[in-house]
Image 1 (cartoon, rainbow, N blue to C red):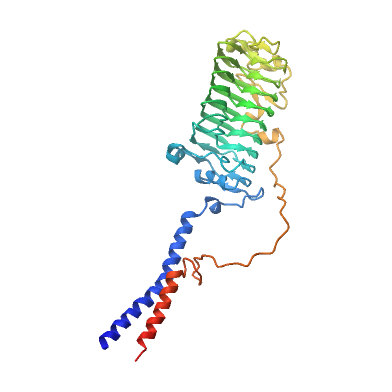
Image 2 (tube, helix red, strand yellow; image 1 turned 45 degrees about the horizontal axis):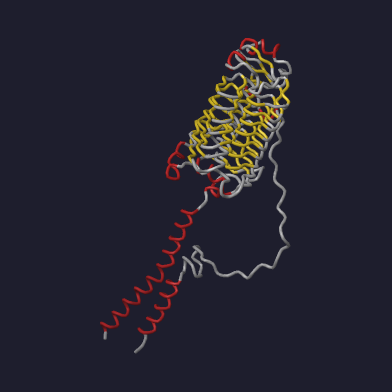
Length: 426
């Protein structure tokens, strides 16, 4: 009888111990789950408003922009993104705004750089740091990038429908199809005071800065190597909007239509120049490859560097041919009529450059680009009565059906009480 009573007492003690331990185990498990699923966005400094933007300091935090495409962000320091080479089984960084819609917030680089960014998506369109941007991007520099995609490919954005100011890119950009640019693949917003010094290639419609531009480009430039099968331009592959106060010093290699500044022009070109080498087998020109009746005014090309005989491959009567000496140094101020050297341009030992290219000039100030403001609130439906709350899992340790006191803990407590009743029988 004493042995049976002792056995029951030991059993009771075990049951009671388990009933006490189970909640603690549940709490610990829930806490571990919360830690492993927490968002980088929730751990970043800032709240995502224009007045208190999220502060990005790591490649993981840069990727976290995808979690809130309407928020506002700033870079807090230079970012070494070379680790992205190993992400996603070697496919690299995931373009922001790809699967979840366009980016509509703002990103201010604060003059910092993102270096070593890798994106390899040869079968995917709209590839870049941003897949599609309708927001405001400014003062960010991408260095030594490797961007590979199908069509609509650029280092900063596959498609820009917003504003890009004071931003730049260096590295290699490759597209297996068309609309490939050093900075953006397609510009249907605006690009101001920005540049690309890249090696960019694609099958058709390739440009040193933008593959296709349907929006204005002002005070920008491109240099490097531009290669395409059908249409290529030192600055823009196909221009269908206003191109102003911009230039290209590139090497353009194309089979069909190519120009030192623009491949095919259907917009306007004003106060711009090309000092690009152009090599092609069909319609190639020192300034544009094909122009038709589009307006080109106060624009120039270096006939010594171009290696071609005409400003336009289709023999359009546009542009002014000058020698390298006439376009360089102090001579440029006398020979490039229409160039505003008081506010926009300045001479150098080489070709003219923009005043914002000096380190002491802020492109945003010179071009009077507004600071991003908060978007108007989204209209919401009339409020409805709140539903009666139902118990939800909790890791706080309070009683409920969850990781704290779950079903196992409840069962063990009941078993303990039953065992207690047995031991008290005579």
